[in-house]
Length: 295
Image 1: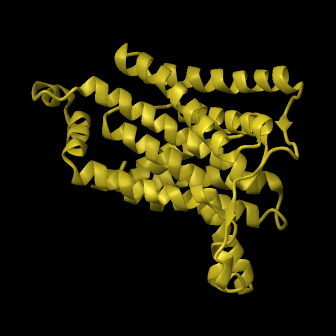
Image 2: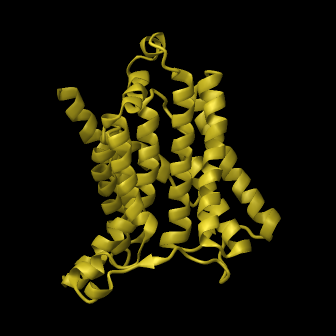
């Protein structure tokens, strides 16, 4: 196995991790305020769809990413109102939103473009790829070759979230709502408002993850493109105990599973390689649950 091949695998890990990490950070934030947000999958999928559609008509990458982010936030606003304000059951609302978005994107794909399955066009502009020019022909250069700004930004966002939650007064108020909402509200903290904002911010992160998926790794939209990544991100956040920094490493684990599946496509059957991320998710959750039981 050559160093060049190893560098390509590591590069694939980083690219596969970015969408999962962004959605996992959204899940972690919801977890910190005591909200179980099941609608992450739908929020990510709408980000994939809207960013590609806007890109198709405008060819403006920045506007496309912003549109994808805002679309995730709009879906999250619906979740916040139904689940936080009106105390709706989380599983019912989350599952309904996921099914609604999956059906809506497929329907709009047909209505707008007359297509079923996928949308790919030369007019769609991909995210700009960054490379370290002086190190382009070295191992380090190949590891970080063709990564987008979002691939780097997701780690920066995780650090900012950690600083906000654990190093600021407002962050401690957010954490207090998750620990004991009634007690926090008795001290003047607006618990419901904080929970709703957290859900909306998680939607914005999911929308950004969707834009990274549809405009970064590839430049197209396919029906159900998120393909369970929202649920994988929930597992990553759970394994990371909803801690932003630990969630980076748990997301990298699932990024490794996806990159491994891609790397093995030429060696074993595609049905097996496609199942690797989901097998890894189940196995990791089993091990994580066993460790928690021992404690």
